[in-house]
Amino acid sequence: MDEIYDVIIIGSGPAGLTAAIYTTRASLKTLIIAGEKWGGQLMLTTLVENFPGFPEGIQGPDLMTNMRKQAEHHGAEILDRNFSSGDFSKKPFEITADGKVYKAKSVLIATGADTKWLGVPGEQEKIGRGVSTCAPCDAPFFRGKDVIVVGGGDSAMEEALVLSRTAKSVTLVHRRDQFRASQVMQDKVKANTQITCLFNKEIVEILGENKVESVKLKDTVTGEVSEQKIDGVFVAVGHVPNTQIFKGIHLDEQGFIVVHDHYLTNIEGVFVAGDVHDNEYKQAITAAGFGCAAALEAEKWLMEQK
Image 1 (cartoon, rainbow, N blue to C red):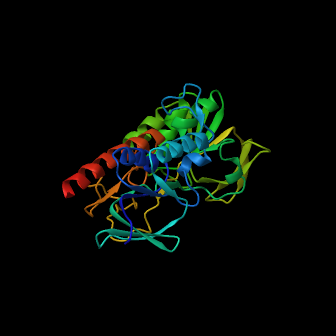
Image 2: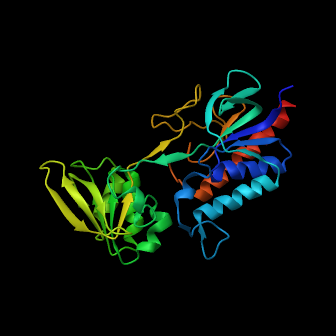
Image 3: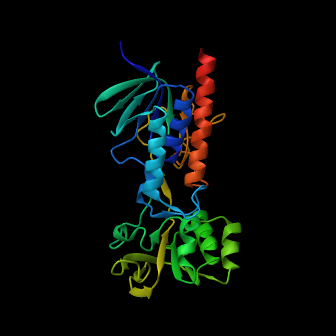
């Protein structure tokens, strides 16, 4: 007879691992489809200073390793294989990973979102060395320094405003001639004397030996290329939620999973937590909180099924 899990959690970032801590402690048989690259975005982070409980901060990979060990300690099974498909049309649900089918009474999707990068030379190797995507996380490291924020939406405005409190100067670089951000956010940026706006410009290369030292900027109208000295580059051109692979799950126009009635998807018994539905906060602590809440909702739902 096929083994049936109470909960299968797809994803192993803060949301998925926190959910597993709660489901296992509730004596629910739990399998985490962690992925070959487990741990989510924090595995690409260096020092995390804003996760409660670590006064000196903690390295991102260390934090995720601790969460994983805690989930395993309480009995979670973890499979370091990539999710390939889910059949939510039958009960129990059938989840396929690495060619094998796993069955579950409930499923919790916590696949997160990936940062949209610029894709320019010098970017990837300088992540954590001057290239960042999170001002609330990394602004203190740029106190008194000159930084660039790339983007034209609300998140770029928010990044620039956060950085303006600590950085010496903030330059907002946008490839078009006007921002697409809400007017209220644009007004806040324009009123801030720390922030300079550069329109019709895009970064084509990030320069420096082992850290960001300057960028090459291309004028999108004339094609002219110039170089600007800079200490940090914050990329704020959006996130791509990891939802493309789910069939039958309702998504919003940006591809994030639509939440119904406390962390439920449009399919009864399929729950969701973290950056895969959260286009607002995108913090490790909120993802963990969402994971906790979704696990409690799944536990309650499973009790009601009995």
